[in-house]
Amino acid sequence: MNARASDAAGRLHVHGFLNLNKERGMTSTQVVRVVKRLTRARKVGHGGTLDPEASGVLPVCLGQACRFVDAVIGAGKEYRMTVRLGQATSTYDAEGEVTRTADASVVDRASFEAVLERFRGQIQQVPPMYSALKRAGRPLYELARSGVTVERAPRPVSITKLVLARWANPDVELVVECGRGFYARSLANDIGEALGSAAHLAGLVRTRSGPFRIEESVSVAELERMVNLGNWSERLLPSDFVLGGLRSIVLDPLLEEKVSHGSPVPVAAWTETDAVDGDRVRLYSTEGRFLALARYDPAGPSWRPEKVIPEHPTEP
Image (cartoon, rainbow, N blue to C red):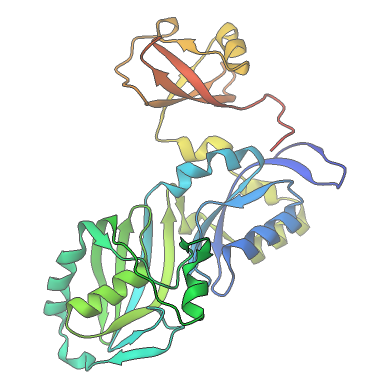
């Protein structure tokens, strides 16, 4: 655990990621509050909201790791979702009122699988009214609860994988890999409409968020037990864990000093590169300490530090 000191309130300067398995019924904000209380970390956040009725992977960032949360939010996700045929609801999930019914028994497996093809690749998806998107400063779900419905513009969404995992009509289980901005509830509703029937989301588990996988996650209850035993830091992943897909560069002590002050590193100082404008790399010391996230600047050419990690970080 990277905990160097505590503030006046006794909060620790802890830095890293926790791969948590959120249970159904908790909000993502509630999970953050629990982690903050258990670990006494000064700064805690999460890497992408997971609906209260959904369970699964919720990456939680502590301290300096919060600076790299965008890498988690923008990364691909995987879900296991249960679609219930025969009923459409106001919220597109099991929590809403039934707005339309249909005979689910007339939908067979072949026709269902044929419809899935429409939702693979780059698609346009209309966000549900019951979402955290804002209109004139108000979340859409607040408007929906007041009985107000507003037009929502379709948004481009990438679905790289959509397969039928289990057929047990009226309940159908899908495995979905997708990009940022995807709404499982909208997909369930849209599938029902595409079938000329009705459907809603009956269950959702996030099995992966970027490099965080559910089989390597820890529940909030397990984290609490580890905190009581004093070994919870064994579950803490380093701040650069989410940047593993980027090229890494090891710097000599002189260049390490330059980076610590935010100065760019000349490309010629280490090797030639095929990088293009905007490419990012991880910079490390010869001892393996993560120094900074840097962006390629062709004008140098150089690697210009974007986010520098102090050797003894005491600020989140």
